[in-house]
Image (cartoon, rainbow, N blue to C red; front, side):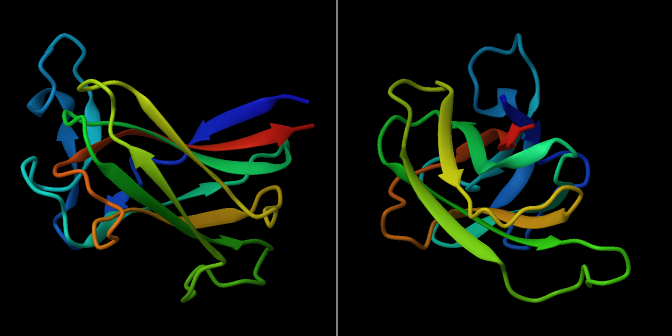
Length: 172
Protein backbone atom coordinates (compact mmCIF):
# COMPACT_ATOMS: atom_id res chain seq x y z
CA UNK A 1 0.00 0.00 0.00
CA UNK A 2 1.28 3.48 -0.90
CA UNK A 3 0.18 7.04 -0.23
CA UNK A 4 -0.69 8.93 -3.42
CA UNK A 5 -1.68 12.50 -4.30
CA UNK A 6 -3.71 13.82 -7.21
CA UNK A 7 -4.23 17.50 -8.01
CA UNK A 8 -7.78 18.70 -7.43
CA UNK A 9 -7.63 22.11 -9.05
CA UNK A 10 -7.03 22.99 -12.65
CA UNK A 11 -8.72 24.31 -15.76
CA UNK A 12 -12.23 23.53 -14.49
CA UNK A 13 -11.68 25.28 -11.13
CA UNK A 14 -13.41 28.62 -10.73
CA UNK A 15 -13.39 31.39 -8.13
CA UNK A 16 -16.41 32.43 -6.12
CA UNK A 17 -18.06 35.81 -6.71
CA UNK A 18 -16.40 37.78 -3.87
CA UNK A 19 -13.50 39.13 -5.96
CA UNK A 20 -11.10 38.05 -3.19
CA UNK A 21 -9.94 34.85 -4.93
CA UNK A 22 -8.50 34.76 -8.44
CA UNK A 23 -5.73 33.20 -10.54
CA UNK A 24 -2.67 35.38 -10.81
CA UNK A 25 0.85 35.20 -12.19
CA UNK A 26 3.20 34.32 -9.33
CA UNK A 27 5.72 36.97 -10.36
CA UNK A 28 3.26 39.71 -9.24
CA UNK A 29 4.20 39.04 -5.60
CA UNK A 30 7.37 36.95 -6.00
CA UNK A 31 10.74 38.65 -6.33
CA UNK A 32 12.40 36.10 -8.61
CA UNK A 33 10.97 36.09 -12.13
CA UNK A 34 12.82 32.96 -13.29
CA UNK A 35 10.13 30.39 -12.43
CA UNK A 36 6.92 31.82 -13.81
CA UNK A 37 3.65 30.09 -13.04
CA UNK A 38 0.07 30.74 -12.09
CA UNK A 39 -1.14 30.63 -8.50
CA UNK A 40 -4.52 31.27 -6.90
CA UNK A 41 -4.52 34.45 -4.85
CA UNK A 42 -6.64 34.38 -1.70
CA UNK A 43 -7.03 38.01 -0.57
CA UNK A 44 -7.02 40.91 -3.02
CA UNK A 45 -4.87 43.19 -0.82
CA UNK A 46 -1.35 42.45 0.30
CA UNK A 47 -1.57 45.09 3.01
CA UNK A 48 -4.74 44.03 4.83
CA UNK A 49 -6.34 40.81 5.98
CA UNK A 50 -9.45 39.81 4.07
CA UNK A 51 -12.68 40.12 6.03
CA UNK A 52 -14.83 37.66 4.08
CA UNK A 53 -14.76 33.93 3.46
CA UNK A 54 -13.67 33.45 -0.15
CA UNK A 55 -12.37 30.66 -2.35
CA UNK A 56 -12.64 28.44 -5.35
CA UNK A 57 -15.01 25.75 -6.54
CA UNK A 58 -13.96 22.55 -8.25
CA UNK A 59 -14.45 18.85 -8.64
CA UNK A 60 -12.54 15.63 -9.13
CA UNK A 61 -13.17 11.90 -9.44
CA UNK A 62 -12.08 9.49 -6.72
CA UNK A 63 -9.33 7.35 -8.33
CA UNK A 64 -9.82 3.68 -9.22
CA UNK A 65 -7.09 2.60 -6.79
CA UNK A 66 -8.52 4.50 -3.79
CA UNK A 67 -8.75 2.47 -0.58
CA UNK A 68 -8.95 5.03 2.22
CA UNK A 69 -7.20 7.57 4.46
CA UNK A 70 -8.50 10.66 2.58
CA UNK A 71 -6.67 13.94 3.18
CA UNK A 72 -6.70 17.33 1.46
CA UNK A 73 -3.24 18.88 1.16
CA UNK A 74 -3.07 22.64 0.62
CA UNK A 75 0.31 23.83 -0.69
CA UNK A 76 0.65 27.57 -0.27
CA UNK A 77 2.95 30.49 0.41
CA UNK A 78 2.90 34.21 1.15
CA UNK A 79 5.21 37.18 1.05
CA UNK A 80 4.22 37.96 4.64
CA UNK A 81 5.82 36.19 7.59
CA UNK A 82 3.42 36.71 10.47
CA UNK A 83 -0.12 35.72 11.24
CA UNK A 84 -2.27 32.70 10.47
CA UNK A 85 -4.47 31.64 7.58
CA UNK A 86 -7.68 29.67 8.12
CA UNK A 87 -8.37 27.20 5.30
CA UNK A 88 -11.83 25.62 4.93
CA UNK A 89 -12.69 22.66 2.73
CA UNK A 90 -16.25 21.53 2.18
CA UNK A 91 -17.44 18.90 -0.23
CA UNK A 92 -20.13 16.54 -1.38
CA UNK A 93 -19.63 13.15 -3.03
CA UNK A 94 -21.91 12.03 -5.83
CA UNK A 95 -21.91 8.47 -7.14
CA UNK A 96 -23.93 6.01 -9.13
CA UNK A 97 -25.25 6.01 -12.66
CA UNK A 98 -28.47 7.99 -13.06
CA UNK A 99 -29.12 7.74 -9.31
CA UNK A 100 -27.84 10.94 -7.66
CA UNK A 101 -28.06 14.58 -8.69
CA UNK A 102 -24.92 16.67 -9.16
CA UNK A 103 -27.06 19.73 -8.36
CA UNK A 104 -27.47 19.45 -4.59
CA UNK A 105 -27.50 21.96 -1.77
CA UNK A 106 -25.50 21.46 1.40
CA UNK A 107 -22.27 19.70 2.13
CA UNK A 108 -21.31 16.23 3.21
CA UNK A 109 -18.47 17.49 5.37
CA UNK A 110 -16.94 20.88 6.21
CA UNK A 111 -13.46 20.90 7.76
CA UNK A 112 -10.95 23.57 8.76
CA UNK A 113 -7.23 23.97 9.43
CA UNK A 114 -5.31 26.99 10.69
CA UNK A 115 -1.76 27.33 9.37
CA UNK A 116 0.94 29.88 10.27
CA UNK A 117 2.49 32.21 7.70
CA UNK A 118 5.90 31.13 6.38
CA UNK A 119 9.04 31.81 8.43
CA UNK A 120 10.49 33.68 5.42
CA UNK A 121 8.74 35.15 2.39
CA UNK A 122 7.73 32.65 -0.31
CA UNK A 123 8.58 29.49 1.63
CA UNK A 124 6.51 26.45 0.62
CA UNK A 125 3.93 25.42 3.22
CA UNK A 126 1.66 22.39 3.48
CA UNK A 127 -1.56 22.42 5.45
CA UNK A 128 -3.33 19.07 5.70
CA UNK A 129 -6.94 18.31 6.51
CA UNK A 130 -8.09 14.77 7.28
CA UNK A 131 -11.46 13.88 5.77
CA UNK A 132 -14.17 11.42 6.77
CA UNK A 133 -14.00 7.96 5.22
CA UNK A 134 -17.05 8.56 3.01
CA UNK A 135 -15.43 8.29 -0.44
CA UNK A 136 -15.89 5.51 -2.98
CA UNK A 137 -14.06 4.74 -6.21
CA UNK A 138 -15.33 6.75 -9.21
CA UNK A 139 -17.46 9.12 -7.14
CA UNK A 140 -17.49 12.72 -8.28
CA UNK A 141 -16.40 15.07 -5.51
CA UNK A 142 -17.68 18.65 -5.67
CA UNK A 143 -15.76 21.01 -3.38
CA UNK A 144 -15.22 24.55 -2.17
CA UNK A 145 -11.73 25.44 -0.90
CA UNK A 146 -11.78 28.71 1.03
CA UNK A 147 -9.72 31.10 3.06
CA UNK A 148 -11.92 32.19 5.92
CA UNK A 149 -11.06 35.85 6.36
CA UNK A 150 -14.15 36.24 8.55
CA UNK A 151 -12.68 33.82 11.13
CA UNK A 152 -10.94 35.67 13.98
CA UNK A 153 -8.08 33.14 13.81
CA UNK A 154 -7.19 34.33 10.26
CA UNK A 155 -4.71 37.07 11.16
CA UNK A 156 -2.32 37.25 8.20
CA UNK A 157 -2.63 40.79 6.85
CA UNK A 158 -2.34 40.02 3.15
CA UNK A 159 -2.72 37.50 0.37
CA UNK A 160 -2.20 33.75 0.69
CA UNK A 161 -1.01 32.18 -2.57
CA UNK A 162 -2.30 28.70 -3.36
CA UNK A 163 0.36 26.76 -5.25
CA UNK A 164 -1.47 23.43 -5.28
CA UNK A 165 -4.34 21.50 -3.75
CA UNK A 166 -4.26 17.70 -3.63
CA UNK A 167 -6.40 14.73 -2.68
CA UNK A 168 -4.12 12.35 -0.80
CA UNK A 169 -5.15 8.75 -0.20
CA UNK A 170 -3.99 5.19 0.36
CA UNK A 171 -4.18 2.80 -2.59
CA UNK A 172 -4.55 -0.97 -2.97
